Amino acid sequence: MTNQQLNSGNPRVDIEYRRRKSAEEMRHQVVSFALMIFLTLIAFAAVAIKGFSAWFIVPFILLLAVIQVIFQLYYFMHMSHKGHEAPSLFLYAGLFVGLVTVLAFVTIIWW
Image (cartoon, rainbow, N blue to C red; front, side, top):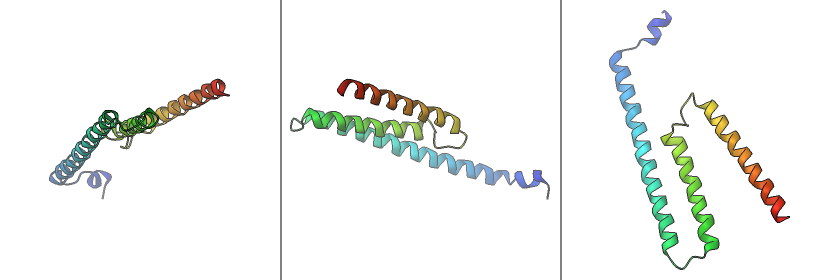
């Protein structure tokens, strides 16, 4: 068989495959969106409840924010798909440089 025959399958099968992949992608985005709304409501509830101290609320909200950033990068910005290796590399390199910079300043100030 030639290479063209192997790559050109049944158009109906290709359409069905794309439709299934699109439905799966949409399901992931809707679930991710619902989880982000839920995390936002948890953050509002943590602030609204008077029983928690600021020493708990601030790190807790920052943790929820990090989780939401991960959801947005991997589902809404499609970082989990193939072909996004270079943007991922730059994103993680920038994150690493930023964390090292913050760590250096914290070390300089507090020690």
